[in-house]
Amino acid sequence: MNLTLRIWRQKSATAPGRFETYEVRDVLPDMSFLEMLDVLNERLIAEGREPVAFESDCREGICGACSLVINGIPHGGHKGTTACQLHMRHFRDGQTITIEPWRARAFPIIKDLIVDRSALDRIIQAGGFISVNTGSAPEANSILVPKDVAERAMDAAACIGCGACVAACKNASAMLFVAAKVSHLNLLPQGKPEKDRRVRNMVAQMDREGFGACTVTGSCEAVCPKEISLAFIAKMNRDYAAALLKGVPRRETATAA
Image (cartoon, rainbow, N blue to C red; front, top):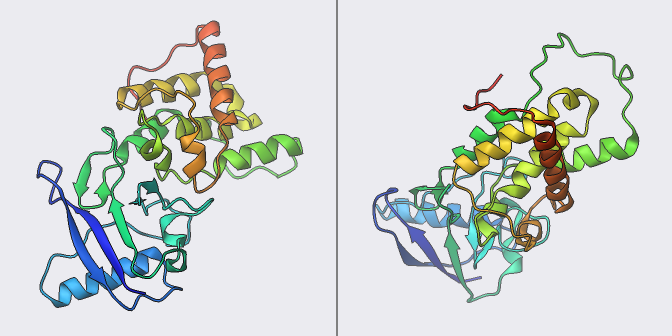
């Protein structure tokens, strides 16, 4: 396969960015999208040119580092697939592919296709944990969890924090991410003692980071590589309303336990 790549290049957060065009030849259909970019970078380095900066880690769809907007869709638009799991057989010989970073005010560009997603880390630090020191791991059957509750909690915990929901949303909302992180703890008995304070703190931190409001367009769910359901946003909204009615205060500054 021979492909034309239009890639966003930007030296730093303050430098102007632009699309640059590259030709990539003899791409194997079984290559992953990131392996194709590796081939491009090897050629650029051999030619003494600056390689394209992009993130990757596990390359197994687990870490969420492969934050690429491919032809206008985060992760490329294949259901339940991260960019590192996207294979070149899904593209046509001679096709032009446009590759951009996540676009959101809360995700400033660091270089080329790499953005700063530490805003998501700060939301987790605001309440995405259980602060009680339980010592060694308790016996598994000492706290019984209904099967349906355990399955819902695991569905929420599948979120890998990639930020595709933010990149796809017209408002750059992080509601699906926050809802997943709130819900997977709030559903379980171990997380219930802090559930009201947790949801207030994490929502407050999300607002401080400058993410937009959710208008429930469903674009986040459509591009989520772990297929996190919009139902978790509804659950978080209910938890948040309950916390407000109870008058549970939130911390003014987010700190990790």
